[in-house]
Image (tube, rainbow, N blue to C red; front, side, top):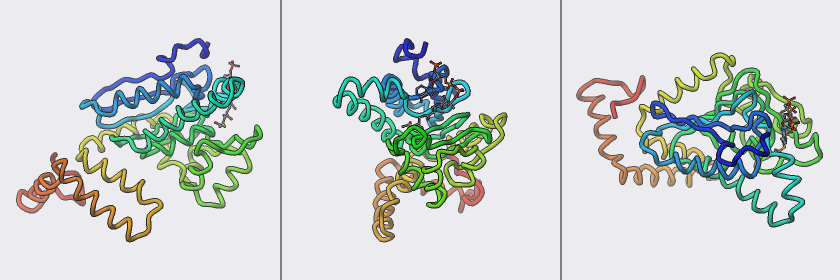
Length: 275
Ligand code: ACO
């Protein structure tokens, strides 16, 4: 059973063609997040983060769920039985890896193959791009069992969805399909289930060709600016661009400009320069 599953097996991953495919791997428990899974996920993310053969990370789920949220037994009931120290420890473990994902060094794609509930909104938001199967199901089910959407979930809904839609979503405990999640801003795009992997691969392959350092600076700038004024955002962008120079950004830009203006081998409006 899933409770017996060794910590190491709660997350599965493979690396192929510069893409890391990471899976929530408790399909018999609909991939709900136990303290074991949370600890293992943090390790796996850190292990993959600086590998030269990982340019993009995809987070998906084994079986018919992405993740059914926090594990009501192992994450809530059993920690509550042990006391406040256990509750806080398990909160730090889960929020910890959600945070690592939000500020990940490499671009990340959530490939939502099925159920995505409650606590799952943390890693959903942590991924830079989110592609869902049209028939995946998204829910803030917290209200259905008498709690509020915590662990970041209500913030994620408020941040990504139009306010009226987010409020309804949080209060009603009704699920959205992948298609509706796309319409309401919760995911980037929804595609038929049979095209899900193909579409994610297409995006991952496009990201692989872009300048790694510029991508990292871009995603962090987009996230960082959420609570900045226009002027602070502008200042941050200037500093972030200048910081890129210490990773060879000045030379990269010079080379790209040369390929466009002199060699005429590419057009920035139509594709990526040859890194
Ligand atoms: N916590 C603990 N166990 C879970 C969870 C969960 N979040 N989700 C599924 N499971 C377990 C079930 O208890 C069941 O265990 P068992 O085989 O030992 O009986 C097993 O996973 C399979 O689940 P079923 O309910 O039988 O699967 P089904 O496909 O019929 O339904 C569904 C899937 C809709 C996802 C259902 O399992 C469900 O409602 N799960 C809870 C979703 C949820 O509300 N999550 C919490 C969000 S709030 C938060 O994260 C803070």
